[in-house]
Image (tube, rainbow over all chains, first blue to last red; front, side, top):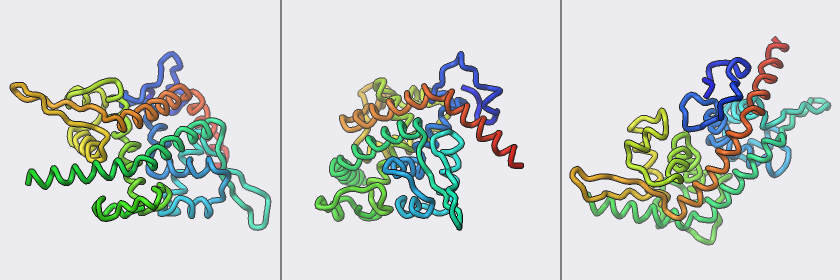
Length: 137
Length: 137
């Protein structure tokens, strides 16, 4: 329920339960961060193991540097991803999941596997939907 | 893997497995439909029971008529939601989940409950993140 525009400290009224169906609840923003186009893929990739930025960008095929950087920042801000600077020349930056990030990523991987495994059913539905549209026209 | 721009019939090569990490795979589009800002909330609401359009719009607080309509169309197209026109004057339109839609919605409700229950942890992370930013400035 606290509004996203306020700071967490001022509005974290723990007597209220988070409710993603309420438009002002910050849990909706966090849900969006983890289910957004790139958030879901970044978390699912990091469930496979730690990644450096460039390797993660190759894994999440199609993401721009800017979008991946923004996505990782939002995930870090919400405490789901840790950004570690490893001592090396040049320094290496590695991303990994926090325990909460790992819990969420596990759920997302389950969802992804379900969707991937049922795509033939989805394609069949898409075909019928297109045929119904054609019939009407 | 088939490209979203092609029709399902022409490209549903069932010898290939769907892979959301491949940028051209249509499973990525379906994943986006179910995890998109309004898709996830519409599916989670329909997991509670069938809804008429106007009631669903009240439940998914903040969604515009146009966005909810587009969201439901995409979910119907992918075979996750059924749109029933009930005989009445004026006719009533009711939305419900298909079996596949219900399976996906169950996963989404689990994810939502996890996120909602852990928001105090997220708020605490957001506060620490803001403080680190301030220290650097």
